Image 1: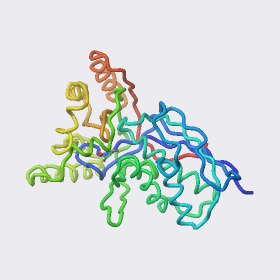
Image 2: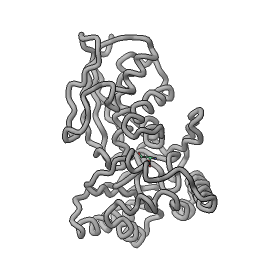
Image 3: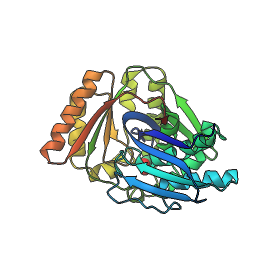
Image 4: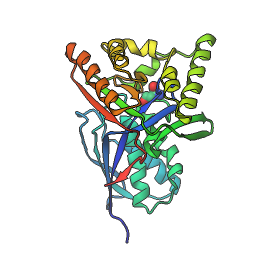
Length: 310
Ligand code: HSE
C-alpha cells in the first residue's frame, strides 16, 4: 500500500569536534527537528507550516533548506509530484547544533520513505548537502553526515565525498551547553580567512589524527589531549560570551575535552562518565547564569540512529 504521509524526527549534531573543522561530527540525542510530508494534488511543493523558527525561515521551496534537497531529489528521479511539507524546528537556528543539517536530512529522508526508498541511505547525502548549502553557503558534511547516518563520522574527503564511520568508546558522554544567542554559520565562516600557517596546520592535523586514534582504540586520555583547535577556536571563541570560562569550568570537573560545537554558540564537552558529564553541565551553566545568558544544558550519548520515522 502506498504511504500517504511520513513524519520523521531528525537528530541534532556536534561538528568540528575540536580540531576537525568541516571533517568530524557526531549525532546526539538531545532534541530533533520534526519533518512531515504528504502527497498533495497541486503538483508542486508547498511548505504548509514552519514552527519554532520565530518567523526566520522562508516558505519558498527553492530557498528553504528542507525543501531544496527534496527538489534536487525529485529532479534526479525525473518525477514531478505535489507535496505538502511541515517543518517543526526544535533544534535552535544558529545554535551550532546542526539545525539546518537536520532539516535538510529530514526532507530527503522523509521523501525517500514516502516514495518507497528509491535511494539507499548513503545516496541521500548529496541531496541533503544541497539543502545545507543553502543555509551555510558552503558545502560541508560534518553535520549532515552524522545526522543522516548517526554515530561519529569522519569526512575523509569531499571530492568525491568519502565518509568513514568511526568506532568510539562505549562510555563516551557528551555535555552540551546552548547559550541562547544566535551565531549564523555563513557569517562565522567568513571570519576564518583562506590561509593557515604551516606550524598551526601541523598542530591541527596531529590533533585530528590523535583524536581518531583515541576514539578507535578507546584511549580516553588521548581523546582528551587531542580535542584542541588552534585554527578556528581562537577566532570564534571571542564571539561566545564567557566561552573560555565555561571551558575552564568543564575541565575543572574532569571532562576529557571541551570546545565549540559547530560554529557555536553551543559548546560540547566529552567525558568518560555520566556523572562527570552532568557535573560539567552544572559548572558551565553556573558561568552562563552569572552573565545572565539564558541557556540549555544537555547530556547525551552519541546517537547511533539518524532520522527515525515517528
Ligand atoms: N564545520 C562547520 C563550521 C559546521 O564550523 O562552519 C557549522 O555548521
